Image (cartoon, rainbow, N blue to C red; front, side, top):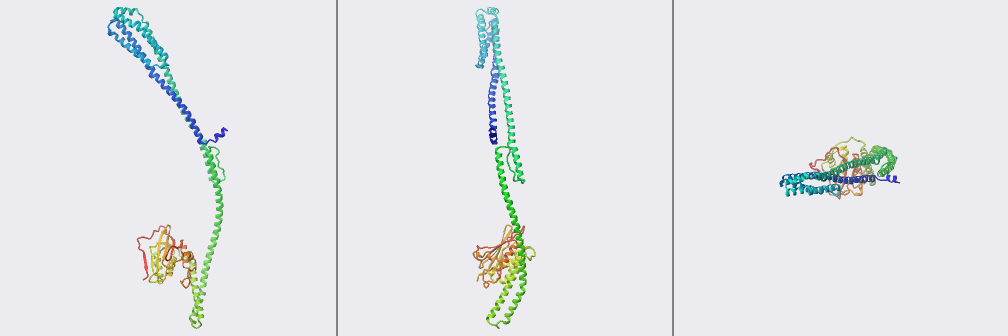
Length: 533
């Protein structure tokens, strides 16, 4: 159960537990180090600020007692008061050093305190039994009596006094040595604590590296290898994290779910691609069949219309001959029938000629060249001048040079401008404007007039072959003009449409591909206008 719980620990939980454990250990070491450092400071204080000053005070006390003993002897010999100065100074030093030693003592310094009490007792005894009696004898009986007293006396008391001072100094030395040893031990303990802390940190780092290697690095390398195999085409390979933390196991599960989704979608894409390829093959076959059919139809239309020319010419010629020779010789109805036959033959000839022109577009080609549309519009104007009339106005802004067949582009503008002239409003001078503007990789052209216009409902019908919007007796023509225009535009890679938003007249837009690297016509060029005089 414990092993299972450990395996379910997340990487964050494991690292947190490691850091917490390491923190507790280092905190314990820090507390121990702080205690040891405090003890070390206390022990150094005992050595430097207590034991050594007390020992120095003991030496000074010993010197002060010697000075007192020397002063007493000198005073006993000379009897002069000045010889008591060393005694008096030694007495002051004695009291000062005893007080100094007492000031350094702690409650636990019982041995030194006992030794100091013995020294004080010995000093008091020596003063009472030796120094003070000698001073009193000199003052009362003179120096000889004092000398005799000293000679009769013994140095045992003073020697015992110095021995007690020596014992006190030994006790102070014991404290100093003990404190020094303890300070050395605490210093070594602190070094050991530092070494232990460093070792723990190093071991924790090594353990963390091993943990990351086992739970992160190696599982990631293994996961990456599995992903590479899947990326290499083995989409059915199951991805899992055999080792590592629960996070990596979850990541591996997510990646495997993504793999399954991709594999499923890829299978669908493959099926769809196969279907698309099959459809493309069918479309290609149909396109080839349609191309062949269109080619055959164009060839049939050309041959049929060409072959119909001769019999139609004969029919028209003989009908016209009948009309000229027998006009007025038969009744009125016969003349009407002959006129119907002549008109029908002529209309048939026009239809066939227009059909021939329509079938030749794109089939009989002279190749694309650079065509200056400004020149083309000039030629168109010349061709339509008889139809334009004196009051017609045809103008165009600077037009670009495009790539195409000049005869077809001329036919294109002839039909568009011709339609504008044909469908003029009664008693209104026709105005026709041709403009061009750049739109990315193509040119957009607009032919606008002020004629009768085209209803929006006929926007698509007007480009259908042989479609007429008016009766034959209202406007001449076969209804193929705009169909030819549409075929020429599409042959050149463009498109054509009717602008149904204009209020007056008709507006037809079409596009042609722009020459690579071609600039727009200079804006500084003045608009050219040609007005029939």
